[in-house]
Image (cartoon, rainbow, N blue to C red; front, top):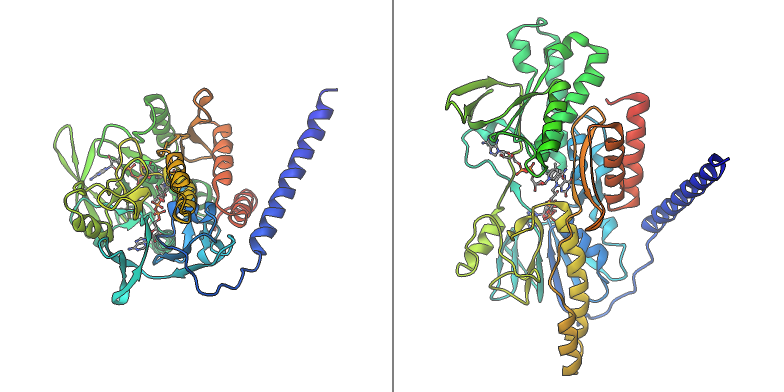
Length: 470
Ligand code: FAD
Ligand code: NAI
């Protein structure tokens, strides 16, 4: 029958996929030894950051062509798409981190890593000023320091809210969640004091806020409700959004589906509610229709209202006041060169502001891949005396073109909304079903930057099905 070839075909494909994965994992863990380098006359390529843009660039470029130094306060790459899953242990924090030391060993050239924060850049003298007042020289600088959470100057946020941006944010939220659940068991069931402690407010209905609220709700419904239903009954997740709907990057049908799904699963949605201030354990929100001010008490407040500019990025803007006059991000040209420092500084990812490019991993990843090709071509141009070759190679450096592959968002209870664009012709939308969840999982497994993280994430997901979350 027809089932037989399908069965054997699937078995063969699964075996090939596992074999490929094991081979990838082995290669990652056993990199070839690097050649011993004597005096280097290569150009100094300094890369700031160890996020999506920088790590994609490092993984894509022939690292033997440049004398590469990576500078970042963070010694790991963070797989941000699954960060909201980490506070409730749907995945372990360690499964979505990859050590920079592993990543810089994958290429054929030596890469130096400096675990330091860059404080400023001097584009005139081609120096990066790092913590401890040290200066690092560069010939070419790749500025990809990402963004920081934006609080819009709302008072009380830094003092009282948690964020969802770095691996440690997940660790802090997890500890706070456990602490509050424990404290609540000592309070009378149904009491105001206990309900306030178990009130968890997420501010910002972008994908970070939605996924965080969805994961918290999963934890309450699927884990807490199992071992202490009374406690779960006193828990309430609130999602506060200033606009009339959440997830503005999706179409109306998809965000309506997400809103209905979240509400059905127990998340209290508060739309048209602009957060105004936070004092202690109370947040004040303003109804943008009635202008009414409402106080909401919380045990946990998570702030997810989007991206802001890092101080080092603002410093670089101040160095180039004539060209860098947009506070939302660094201005770049079509070849990702920083306006005002073309030829010596490239800026990628969330620290930039460019029409048509949204601050996503997808954009940062494609920019990293593009720049690797540009820098490889530049290496040949810089190392030839033949003017004709120089001119013809320069022409091959095309403008960066972004291909939007769509957007995905987890909405809880094994469901997602996916707006997928595989090519200009092949596009589809999928939302609210178990299949949408599996497609979401598959897409993120494919996106993981190493086989090690891919393997650990897959194991974590299986573990949740068998033994639940801790
Ligand atoms: P980052 O990845 O943030 O990396 C910046 C790097 O610079 C970090 O290593 C940082 O430590 C370093 N750095 C910071 N300051 C300095 C300094 N002073 N000197 C040197 N280095 C510095 N996008 C998607 O496309 N799909 C998703 O599903 C998705 N999910 C997300 C989920 C969450 C919770 C979050 C927060 C974001 C998500 N994003 C997603 C967005 C995506 O993570 C960002 O767009 C992406 O990380 C941008 O890459 P980047 O390299 O510009 O910055
Ligand atoms: P965002 O900018 O996408 O969303 C922030 C939300 O907060 C907006 O809806 C805004 O209206 C709201 N807001 C702002 N101020 C407010 C206030 N005072 N009170 C109430 N609401 C307020 O930010 P987010 O979600 O952090 O995403 C940042 C970037 O990362 C985006 O480009 C996003 O696409 C990307 N990302 C993508 C994900 C995915 O594809 N699944 C997941 C997470 C982030």
